[in-house]
Amino acid sequence: MRIGLICRSADNFASRPLLRLAEDISVQNGECFIFVGEGGRLPSGKPQPFFSFLTAVNGRIRPVKVAVQKLPAVQVFTVAAEDEFAFAAAVAATCRRLLLAKKRIDWLHCFAAGDVTAAVLCRKYLRIPFVFSVNSVTGCRQPKKDLASLGISFNHSLTFGEYVFLEQLGASGAEYVCDETGDARYWRLFFAAYGSKYVEGRPWADTAFWSERQNKTRRQRKEELQASLGTNKPVVVACQRVPPPELAELHKDCCFLKDDGSPQKRRAVYQAADFYLAGEEESPWRLPGIMAAGCIPLAAAKSPAGRFLQRLSGGGIACFFAEENLYDALLQAKKELLTRPEKAAVRRQRAVMLVQKECSPAAAAECYSLIYQGFAPVRLPFVTDSQTPD
Image (cartoon, rainbow, N blue to C red; front, side):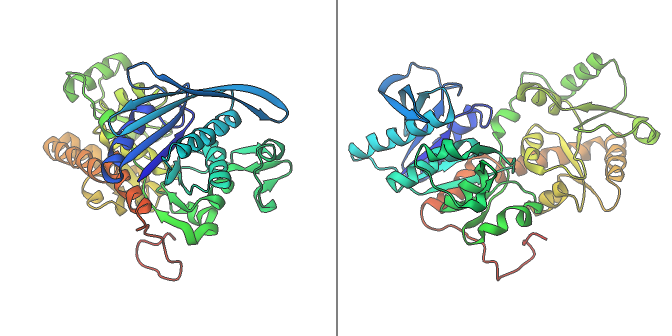
Protein backbone atom coordinates (compact mmCIF):
# COMPACT_ATOMS: atom_id res chain seq x y z
CA MET A 1 0.00 0.00 0.00
CA ARG A 2 1.20 3.53 -0.81
CA ILE A 3 0.14 6.57 1.21
CA GLY A 4 0.70 10.22 0.24
CA LEU A 5 0.77 13.01 2.85
CA ILE A 6 0.16 16.54 1.56
CA CYS A 7 1.60 19.57 3.37
CA ARG A 8 2.59 22.64 1.39
CA SER A 9 3.17 25.05 4.25
CA ALA A 10 5.70 24.49 7.02
CA ASP A 11 3.58 26.83 9.15
CA ASN A 12 0.66 24.39 9.01
CA PHE A 13 2.60 21.28 9.84
CA ALA A 14 6.27 21.35 10.85
CA SER A 15 8.42 18.86 8.96
CA ARG A 16 9.72 16.95 11.98
CA PRO A 17 6.38 15.44 13.05
CA LEU A 18 5.40 14.95 9.41
CA LEU A 19 8.50 12.83 8.80
CA ARG A 20 7.99 10.94 12.05
CA LEU A 21 4.34 10.34 11.15
CA ALA A 22 5.35 9.13 7.68
CA GLU A 23 7.85 6.70 9.17
CA ASP A 24 5.23 5.29 11.54
CA ILE A 25 2.68 5.01 8.72
CA SER A 26 5.17 3.22 6.44
CA VAL A 27 5.82 0.60 9.13
CA GLN A 28 2.14 -0.37 9.11
CA ASN A 29 1.21 0.24 5.48
CA GLY A 30 4.24 0.07 3.19
CA GLU A 31 5.57 3.07 1.25
CA CYS A 32 4.81 6.63 2.25
CA PHE A 33 5.21 9.77 0.12
CA ILE A 34 5.30 13.36 1.37
CA PHE A 35 4.38 16.34 -0.81
CA VAL A 36 5.76 19.54 0.66
CA GLY A 37 6.39 23.12 -0.48
CA GLU A 38 9.82 24.70 -0.57
CA GLY A 39 9.23 26.22 2.88
CA GLY A 40 9.07 22.76 4.47
CA ARG A 41 12.20 22.06 6.51
CA LEU A 42 13.49 18.84 4.99
CA PRO A 43 15.90 16.20 6.28
CA SER A 44 19.58 16.75 5.61
CA GLY A 45 20.67 15.79 2.14
CA LYS A 46 20.33 17.25 -1.31
CA PRO A 47 17.05 16.67 -3.17
CA GLN A 48 17.41 15.20 -6.65
CA PRO A 49 15.47 16.70 -9.61
CA PHE A 50 12.37 14.62 -10.32
CA PHE A 51 10.73 16.53 -13.17
CA SER A 52 9.57 19.99 -14.23
CA PHE A 53 6.64 21.27 -16.25
CA LEU A 54 4.48 24.30 -17.02
CA THR A 55 1.03 24.79 -15.52
CA ALA A 56 -1.75 27.05 -16.74
CA VAL A 57 -4.06 28.47 -14.05
CA ASN A 58 -6.31 31.48 -14.64
CA GLY A 59 -4.65 32.12 -17.96
CA ARG A 60 -1.16 32.34 -16.46
CA ILE A 61 1.65 30.02 -17.51
CA ARG A 62 3.96 29.20 -14.62
CA PRO A 63 6.98 26.90 -14.32
CA VAL A 64 6.96 24.24 -11.62
CA LYS A 65 9.85 22.09 -10.46
CA VAL A 66 9.64 18.93 -8.37
CA ALA A 67 12.58 17.39 -6.53
CA VAL A 68 12.73 14.16 -4.54
CA GLN A 69 14.61 12.85 -1.50
CA LYS A 70 14.55 9.11 -0.94
CA LEU A 71 14.65 7.93 2.65
CA PRO A 72 14.06 4.42 4.00
CA ALA A 73 10.36 3.68 3.27
CA VAL A 74 9.64 7.42 2.75
CA GLN A 75 10.04 9.66 -0.31
CA VAL A 76 9.82 13.43 0.08
CA PHE A 77 8.70 15.42 -2.98
CA THR A 78 9.54 19.12 -2.75
CA VAL A 79 7.53 21.39 -5.02
CA ALA A 80 8.92 24.76 -6.12
CA ALA A 81 5.72 26.63 -6.96
CA GLU A 82 4.63 30.20 -6.27
CA ASP A 83 1.13 29.49 -4.93
CA GLU A 84 -1.23 26.76 -3.75
CA PHE A 85 -2.74 26.26 -7.20
CA ALA A 86 0.59 25.52 -8.87
CA PHE A 87 1.41 23.31 -5.87
CA ALA A 88 -1.88 21.41 -6.30
CA ALA A 89 -1.16 20.93 -10.00
CA ALA A 90 2.31 19.63 -9.13
CA VAL A 91 0.96 17.09 -6.64
CA ALA A 92 -1.50 15.79 -9.24
CA ALA A 93 1.22 15.70 -11.93
CA THR A 94 3.59 13.83 -9.59
CA CYS A 95 0.91 11.29 -8.68
CA ARG A 96 0.25 10.77 -12.39
CA ARG A 97 3.95 10.30 -13.08
CA LEU A 98 4.12 7.69 -10.32
CA LEU A 99 1.02 6.05 -11.78
CA LEU A 100 2.71 5.76 -15.19
CA ALA A 101 5.61 4.07 -13.40
CA LYS A 102 3.05 1.59 -11.98
CA LYS A 103 3.28 3.09 -8.49
CA ARG A 104 -0.28 4.04 -7.75
CA ILE A 105 -0.93 5.92 -4.51
CA ASP A 106 -3.79 4.23 -2.65
CA TRP A 107 -4.63 7.09 -0.27
CA LEU A 108 -3.85 10.78 0.04
CA HIS A 109 -4.10 12.58 3.37
CA CYS A 110 -4.21 16.34 3.97
CA PHE A 111 -4.07 18.18 7.29
CA ALA A 112 -4.90 21.81 6.49
CA ALA A 113 -7.51 23.72 4.49
CA GLY A 114 -4.80 25.16 2.25
CA ASP A 115 -3.91 21.64 1.01
CA VAL A 116 -7.46 20.60 0.16
CA THR A 117 -7.17 21.81 -3.45
CA ALA A 118 -4.39 19.31 -4.19
CA ALA A 119 -6.35 16.41 -2.69
CA VAL A 120 -9.57 17.32 -4.51
CA LEU A 121 -7.67 17.63 -7.80
CA CYS A 122 -6.15 14.15 -7.44
CA ARG A 123 -9.53 12.67 -6.58
CA LYS A 124 -11.19 14.26 -9.62
CA TYR A 125 -8.62 13.34 -12.24
CA LEU A 126 -6.81 10.29 -10.83
CA ARG A 127 -9.56 8.76 -8.68
CA ILE A 128 -7.34 8.72 -5.60
CA PRO A 129 -9.43 8.83 -2.39
CA PHE A 130 -8.27 11.07 0.42
CA VAL A 131 -8.62 11.58 4.16
CA PHE A 132 -9.05 15.08 5.56
CA SER A 133 -7.81 15.61 9.13
CA VAL A 134 -9.27 18.70 10.81
CA ASN A 135 -7.71 20.13 13.98
CA SER A 136 -9.46 23.50 13.77
CA VAL A 137 -12.13 25.12 11.59
CA THR A 138 -10.72 28.38 10.26
CA GLY A 139 -13.25 29.41 7.61
CA CYS A 140 -10.47 29.54 4.98
CA ARG A 141 -11.78 30.59 1.54
CA GLN A 142 -10.64 30.67 -2.09
CA PRO A 143 -12.15 32.49 -5.11
CA LYS A 144 -14.47 30.34 -7.19
CA LYS A 145 -12.72 31.28 -10.42
CA ASP A 146 -9.37 29.95 -9.17
CA LEU A 147 -10.81 26.54 -8.38
CA ALA A 148 -12.85 26.49 -11.57
CA SER A 149 -9.70 27.17 -13.60
CA LEU A 150 -8.39 23.79 -12.36
CA GLY A 151 -11.61 22.07 -13.39
CA ILE A 152 -12.83 21.64 -9.81
CA SER A 153 -16.61 21.72 -9.47
CA PHE A 154 -18.41 22.35 -6.19
CA ASN A 155 -21.85 22.54 -4.67
CA HIS A 156 -23.22 26.05 -4.20
CA SER A 157 -23.86 25.23 -0.53
CA LEU A 158 -20.07 25.45 -0.08
CA THR A 159 -19.87 29.00 -1.38
CA PHE A 160 -20.14 32.48 0.06
CA GLY A 161 -20.46 35.11 -2.63
CA GLU A 162 -17.51 34.63 -4.97
CA TYR A 163 -15.64 32.37 -2.57
CA VAL A 164 -15.59 28.67 -1.67
CA PHE A 165 -15.03 27.45 1.90
CA LEU A 166 -12.06 25.09 1.65
CA GLU A 167 -12.72 23.07 4.80
CA GLN A 168 -16.25 22.29 3.59
CA LEU A 169 -14.90 21.52 0.11
CA GLY A 170 -12.38 19.10 1.59
CA ALA A 171 -14.89 17.43 3.90
CA SER A 172 -17.45 16.98 1.12
CA GLY A 173 -14.88 15.43 -1.24
CA ALA A 174 -13.00 13.30 1.29
CA GLU A 175 -13.69 9.62 1.76
CA TYR A 176 -13.28 10.14 5.50
CA VAL A 177 -13.10 13.21 7.73
CA CYS A 178 -10.99 12.75 10.85
CA ASP A 179 -11.91 15.02 13.76
CA GLU A 180 -8.71 16.01 15.57
CA THR A 181 -10.09 19.12 17.27
CA GLY A 182 -10.76 17.34 20.57
CA ASP A 183 -13.61 19.85 20.90
CA ALA A 184 -17.17 18.50 21.05
CA ARG A 185 -18.58 21.89 20.00
CA TYR A 186 -17.44 21.31 16.42
CA TRP A 187 -19.77 18.33 15.99
CA ARG A 188 -22.80 20.56 15.57
CA LEU A 189 -20.87 23.43 14.00
CA PHE A 190 -19.11 21.40 11.29
CA PHE A 191 -18.83 17.61 11.45
CA ALA A 192 -22.52 16.67 11.76
CA ALA A 193 -22.99 17.51 8.08
CA TYR A 194 -20.51 14.74 7.20
CA GLY A 195 -21.73 12.07 9.64
CA SER A 196 -21.45 9.17 7.18
CA LYS A 197 -17.68 9.70 6.84
CA TYR A 198 -16.87 11.01 10.33
CA VAL A 199 -14.03 9.36 12.27
CA GLU A 200 -13.30 10.57 15.78
CA GLY A 201 -9.58 11.07 16.18
CA ARG A 202 -7.84 13.23 18.74
CA PRO A 203 -5.29 16.03 18.79
CA TRP A 204 -1.73 14.81 18.58
CA ALA A 205 1.71 16.39 18.72
CA ASP A 206 5.36 15.71 18.07
CA THR A 207 5.90 14.46 21.59
CA ALA A 208 9.62 13.92 20.98
CA PHE A 209 10.06 17.60 20.07
CA TRP A 210 8.09 18.95 23.04
CA SER A 211 9.82 16.65 25.53
CA GLU A 212 13.33 17.18 24.16
CA ARG A 213 15.70 18.15 26.97
CA GLN A 214 18.67 20.54 26.81
CA ASN A 215 20.90 18.96 29.50
CA LYS A 216 19.17 20.88 32.28
CA THR A 217 16.83 19.73 34.98
CA ARG A 218 13.31 21.13 35.14
CA ARG A 219 14.24 22.94 38.33
CA GLN A 220 17.17 24.67 36.60
CA ARG A 221 14.97 25.74 33.69
CA LYS A 222 12.37 27.11 36.07
CA GLU A 223 14.95 29.07 38.04
CA GLU A 224 16.35 30.57 34.82
CA LEU A 225 12.86 31.56 33.70
CA GLN A 226 12.10 33.15 37.08
CA ALA A 227 15.38 35.08 36.93
CA SER A 228 14.63 36.34 33.43
CA LEU A 229 11.19 37.52 34.60
CA GLY A 230 12.64 39.08 37.77
CA THR A 231 10.30 37.19 40.09
CA ASN A 232 10.71 34.89 43.08
CA LYS A 233 7.11 33.66 43.13
CA PRO A 234 7.21 29.87 43.66
CA VAL A 235 4.57 28.88 41.08
CA VAL A 236 4.91 29.55 37.32
CA VAL A 237 1.76 29.28 35.22
CA ALA A 238 1.64 29.43 31.41
CA CYS A 239 -1.60 30.61 29.81
CA GLN A 240 -3.10 32.38 26.83
CA ARG A 241 -4.97 34.89 28.98
CA VAL A 242 -3.63 36.18 32.30
CA PRO A 243 -6.23 36.24 35.13
CA PRO A 244 -7.36 39.76 36.09
CA PRO A 245 -5.19 41.42 38.80
CA GLU A 246 -8.13 41.81 41.18
CA LEU A 247 -7.94 38.06 41.85
CA ALA A 248 -5.26 38.70 44.45
CA GLU A 249 -5.30 35.17 45.88
CA LEU A 250 -4.16 33.80 42.51
CA HIS A 251 -1.39 36.36 41.96
CA LYS A 252 -0.05 36.02 45.50
CA ASP A 253 2.25 33.06 44.79
CA CYS A 254 1.84 32.67 41.02
CA CYS A 255 3.73 34.20 38.13
CA PHE A 256 1.64 34.12 34.94
CA LEU A 257 3.33 33.95 31.54
CA LYS A 258 1.63 34.15 28.14
CA ASP A 259 2.71 31.33 25.85
CA ASP A 260 3.26 33.12 22.55
CA GLY A 261 6.16 33.01 20.10
CA SER A 262 7.76 30.25 18.06
CA PRO A 263 7.36 26.55 18.92
CA GLN A 264 10.90 26.60 20.37
CA LYS A 265 10.05 29.54 22.65
CA ARG A 266 6.80 27.95 23.78
CA ARG A 267 8.60 24.67 24.46
CA ALA A 268 11.07 26.51 26.71
CA VAL A 269 8.12 28.01 28.63
CA TYR A 270 6.25 24.71 28.99
CA GLN A 271 9.36 22.85 30.11
CA ALA A 272 9.90 25.39 32.89
CA ALA A 273 6.33 26.23 33.95
CA ASP A 274 4.53 24.22 36.60
CA PHE A 275 1.04 24.45 35.12
CA TYR A 276 -0.89 25.45 32.02
CA LEU A 277 -4.17 27.27 32.63
CA ALA A 278 -6.57 26.31 29.81
CA GLY A 279 -9.21 28.97 29.18
CA GLU A 280 -12.94 28.24 29.44
CA GLU A 281 -13.43 28.52 25.65
CA GLU A 282 -9.99 27.35 24.56
CA SER A 283 -9.84 24.47 22.09
CA PRO A 284 -7.69 21.59 23.33
CA TRP A 285 -5.63 20.86 20.22
CA ARG A 286 -2.44 22.30 21.77
CA LEU A 287 -2.67 20.35 25.03
CA PRO A 288 -0.76 17.22 23.89
CA GLY A 289 2.38 19.27 23.19
CA ILE A 290 2.01 21.15 26.47
CA MET A 291 1.67 17.92 28.44
CA ALA A 292 4.57 16.28 26.58
CA ALA A 293 6.75 19.16 27.82
CA GLY A 294 5.82 18.22 31.40
CA CYS A 295 3.43 21.10 32.03
CA ILE A 296 0.36 20.01 34.04
CA PRO A 297 -2.92 21.29 32.53
CA LEU A 298 -5.63 22.95 34.61
CA ALA A 299 -9.14 23.06 33.19
CA ALA A 300 -12.78 23.50 34.06
CA ALA A 301 -14.42 20.07 33.91
CA LYS A 302 -17.14 21.16 31.46
CA SER A 303 -14.88 23.22 29.20
CA PRO A 304 -13.65 21.83 25.83
CA ALA A 305 -10.19 21.25 27.32
CA GLY A 306 -11.66 19.57 30.40
CA ARG A 307 -13.86 17.25 28.36
CA PHE A 308 -10.94 16.28 26.14
CA LEU A 309 -8.70 15.50 29.11
CA GLN A 310 -11.40 13.39 30.74
CA ARG A 311 -11.80 11.33 27.55
CA LEU A 312 -8.13 10.36 27.69
CA SER A 313 -7.76 7.15 29.66
CA GLY A 314 -6.22 8.23 32.95
CA GLY A 315 -6.56 11.90 32.13
CA GLY A 316 -8.06 12.67 35.50
CA ILE A 317 -4.91 11.69 37.39
CA ALA A 318 -2.61 13.76 35.17
CA CYS A 319 -4.48 17.07 35.41
CA PHE A 320 -6.52 19.27 37.72
CA PHE A 321 -10.21 19.94 37.12
CA ALA A 322 -12.63 22.42 38.63
CA GLU A 323 -16.38 21.75 38.55
CA GLU A 324 -17.40 25.40 38.51
CA ASN A 325 -14.68 28.04 38.68
CA LEU A 326 -11.56 27.42 36.60
CA TYR A 327 -9.42 29.25 39.13
CA ASP A 328 -10.39 26.71 41.82
CA ALA A 329 -8.28 24.21 39.87
CA LEU A 330 -5.30 26.56 40.08
CA LEU A 331 -5.72 27.03 43.83
CA GLN A 332 -5.87 23.26 44.28
CA ALA A 333 -2.81 22.71 42.08
CA LYS A 334 -0.83 25.45 43.81
CA LYS A 335 -1.54 23.91 47.21
CA GLU A 336 -0.36 20.48 46.09
CA LEU A 337 2.84 21.87 44.53
CA LEU A 338 3.78 23.86 47.63
CA THR A 339 2.83 21.25 50.25
CA ARG A 340 3.33 17.94 48.44
CA PRO A 341 5.81 18.51 45.58
CA GLU A 342 6.49 14.80 45.21
CA LYS A 343 2.83 14.19 44.35
CA ALA A 344 2.94 16.98 41.75
CA ALA A 345 6.04 15.35 40.23
CA VAL A 346 4.17 12.04 39.87
CA ARG A 347 1.22 13.83 38.24
CA ARG A 348 3.61 15.53 35.82
CA GLN A 349 5.19 12.23 34.82
CA ARG A 350 1.77 10.71 34.26
CA ALA A 351 0.85 13.58 31.94
CA VAL A 352 3.98 12.98 29.84
CA MET A 353 3.42 9.22 29.66
CA LEU A 354 -0.26 9.68 28.80
CA VAL A 355 0.29 11.83 25.70
CA GLN A 356 3.22 9.72 24.55
CA LYS A 357 0.84 6.77 24.52
CA GLU A 358 -2.34 8.37 23.16
CA CYS A 359 -1.40 11.62 21.38
CA SER A 360 1.91 10.87 19.64
CA PRO A 361 2.69 10.46 15.91
CA ALA A 362 2.67 6.69 16.49
CA ALA A 363 -0.85 6.87 17.97
CA ALA A 364 -2.02 9.03 15.05
CA ALA A 365 -0.46 6.63 12.54
CA GLU A 366 -2.31 3.72 14.16
CA CYS A 367 -5.63 5.57 13.80
CA TYR A 368 -4.89 6.50 10.18
CA SER A 369 -3.82 2.96 9.34
CA LEU A 370 -7.22 1.63 10.38
CA ILE A 371 -8.75 4.00 7.82
CA TYR A 372 -6.31 3.14 5.02
CA GLN A 373 -6.75 -0.59 5.57
CA GLY A 374 -10.54 -0.47 5.42
CA PHE A 375 -11.31 -0.58 9.14
CA ALA A 376 -12.36 3.05 9.61
CA PRO A 377 -14.32 3.37 12.88
CA VAL A 378 -17.00 5.63 11.40
CA ARG A 379 -19.45 6.98 13.96
CA LEU A 380 -23.01 5.72 13.62
CA PRO A 381 -25.26 8.75 14.28
CA PHE A 382 -28.14 6.52 15.38
CA VAL A 383 -26.06 4.88 18.14
CA THR A 384 -25.25 6.91 21.23
CA ASP A 385 -22.97 6.28 24.17
CA SER A 386 -21.01 8.23 26.75
CA GLN A 387 -18.44 9.28 24.17
CA THR A 388 -20.90 11.04 21.87
CA PRO A 389 -20.40 14.84 21.80
CA ASP A 390 -23.10 16.94 23.43
